[in-house]
Amino acid sequence: MLGILRFILAVMVALSHVGGNFGELWNGVIAVIVFYMISGYAMTGLISKRFPTTNAAFPFYFERIVRLAPQYYFWLMLALIFSLVLKWYPYKVDVFCCLSYEAFAYFTVIPLGLQSYFGSVDALILPQATTLAIEITLYIFSPWILKSLKLSWLAAIISLIIFLATAIGKLPPNTYTYFSSPGPVVFYILGSLLYRKEWVSLSVLVFTLISILIFSLPQRLNTEFLLGVCIGLPLIAFLIRFKPNKIDSAFGNASYGCFLGHGIVFFTLTHFFGEIDNAIYRVIATLLACLAGWLSFYVIEKPTLPFRRLIKSSGGSN
Image 1 (cartoon, one colour):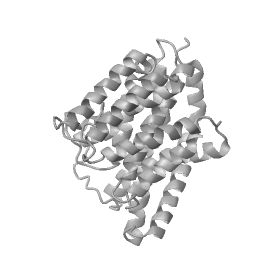
Image 2: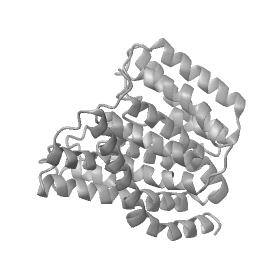
Image 3: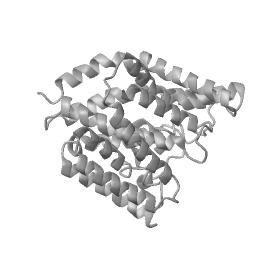
């Protein structure tokens, strides 16, 4: 039953961008942390079932590209059209030309998740693409770290060191723990350990992470990290006990497009009807973003499903 949860998380991210937060908390950050844990859980299952052999890394990468790329480039093209042609988009993308670093970053995606190391991207065309980029960098190492408990722990320890370094002031908070890899890898590993039922490792890792977060709680976003783990992990553990059904799948299908495209929907509404500044307007705008996500799945992503099934059925077996 993770499809409905993914949908709710996408809605939380969307609402956070129009002032629909829980008091001082950024509920979009909480949602992203839970997204990472779901991803770690799901990718461990995908690799163990469909890509278990040593030569399965590239088929796994190919399947992930076919899954993520169509909708990503669809929404990216819409954002560029709305900004450069229709002038509806508020973010300035004057620097976005064919030879710019921004263009390279957005079309290759991965640099968006490494901005702390290789330079920031000035053009905010799809801001949430940073989260997608971080997840893709996690996919690169997944065929190895999600199969080996030792490598999982190594990845988690690197992430914990980054969290600890921010806690004692050696690194700026959030920049390395949330906006760049490999900081968020610890959340990904939590989901993986849950799938593998490594209860001792899971307990130790949760305790260590929570201890570091509590120690550095005054830092911005650490409360959101803490809530994401303390609420999200038990919720995932509860929901995986139920088998997916058509309703769950329908909601899950809308989540990715809603996550990527809600900004375009919101900016279009703002262009024609003014700022989204009241509860009713927020609800209507979010519902339209969900509808856009659902439509983009059926128009853009659904035609790729037979190809993805083919990749999964032959992944790593030859």
